[in-house]
Length: 166
Image 1 (cartoon, rainbow, N blue to C red):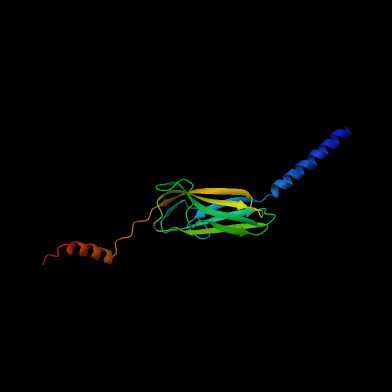
Image 2 (cartoon, rainbow, N blue to C red):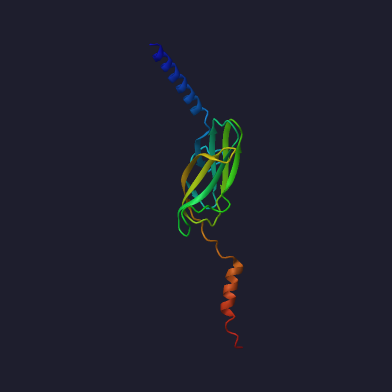
């Protein structure tokens, strides 16, 4: 009987220790993407020229963490799957205890339309990736800029200057 009590007590201590470790592990509890800075409404469809905002909530961080954000191509004509969009890499420090890492990326007017992935990876102080989340988004391509009056005049001048036989 005494052995059973000791075994039960040992199991209870191990269970309590295991649960305590699980609750104190830093994690990314949520990752939202939207069109406003506070990400009050989640969105997954954007147009060239829009600004894309992200918010990654870090919980139970026992030390400083860093969230690394980046946008990559998923199914975009002329781009390789996984290709990171130039200028989209941003590292955001989150203090001990956790908090919200925020991200913003003005989408260029000439960004190709297609499907993209916004990634948020959480790293510990040693630089090890500990958690991460992704959101699939769709970006509608921008329109090609209209010709400027100078460009239009130049093309007309070239056609009228072809006859110099006066």
